[in-house]
Length: 548
Ligand code: GLN
Image (cartoon, rainbow, N blue to C red; front, top):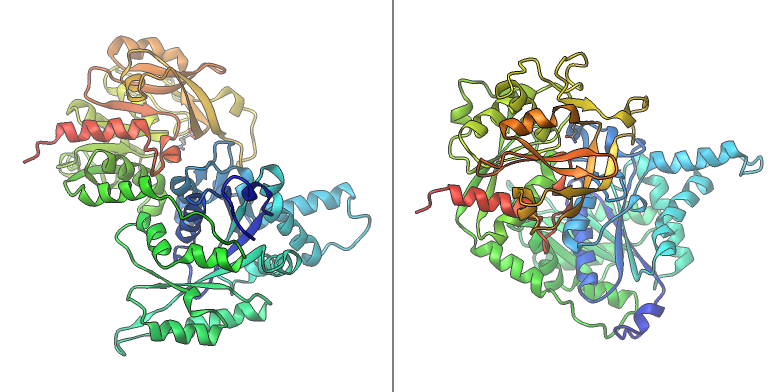
């Protein structure tokens, strides 16, 4: 098939790329999927990337971040795996609830159908009923919009018991669609044995054999490695795995995940894939703005430190915030070092030391009581020391509580989440939440409008846009009964959701940068479009540092 931009493109049948992983988890399948998506998008193809998670939860919304890292939220209000954040940050294309599927959702649909009587008395089985539903979901996105490529990442590793129905669905789809429309890219790990001084290919061979045993022959292998792979080693892998040597790609550790697309392109990942799918003569990827970002990132060597005050002692819990700071840092010509400060360990005695040298502070989102005293202390410290502070969701709520206690004098001010009976419920359960009993998927989720108060710092940060849209994930909310009392003492509500009159943003205009948002701006910062609030926050942090 010959690809001619703008003509053949629209007539091309959708192609399906399945990304699987073997040997170990955490090899970066999400980054490889996002990078491949980026490279195809950069050639003018219409793409989407979706994630299939074999766990039984309906979505990760009810999962503790220690289990699965951050819960990412799509604009249409789906709580999803954090890999969807990578897909959006790399491609700038919004994902939807159709891009995130778990075993739980698959079974839920099948069981609902069974209860309705749709199966007309048949016995419901993993094959074909569960696998058919997986296949339906794999094809679904392309039935709703014209797409050239659908990239499906399968979570976990291929040996997992719970992955089996997904692999069977891939096997069947490859057979049904044919080799020119469906392709498997398998990611494995090549360990380095220091004692032997050698890189070992056996786990990769075993993993591919396992895949072959399930009826799937991978066309492309991406080998994750900490050391450069020799040609000889790649030939060996090719020989044992029935894969062309050119299709054995290495994914070596790089200084930044954003270098992966370029690295994959240099090794010809996208060209090989297009050849295998029979697509010829397509335009070269246009990665100009992406490369500009990379070179700007490289030359931004001056470091500023920004504290992340939160309770989850693991990087992945605040993934999107860290990435948003990194984007804004690059476009402000700085390297942002996000320093985790565990709010559970903050005391009045050590706060000055803990925040020493920080150009700014992010008070992080979260749920429940644990660690909130430290967040409130941090909000007080930064307010009284005029340190740029960005409160996000629970972080914003903690700024409000701190202000109520220490400026308005309501010593018992609290959120009803922490103290249901507080007489000063400055943060209250939203009206619509009061009748809700189910935990999963019932928060105020996804994109909502927010009107900005003209002249406010936030309005200026958004380049004087008066109506913005941001994504949410919360049950509690600023109590409007207190708006006037707060305003009189200097904390203003400067962003309101017009439909429900909910406070979305508070700020203290007399301080350098002290802004709290009920929404999560971090979900919509991308490599090519850094988020305006993060841009303005990082700028304020830089202006406050005395640099040599
Ligand atoms: N726990 C708070 C609420 O439900 C904040 C949620 C969050 O930080 N995402 O409103």
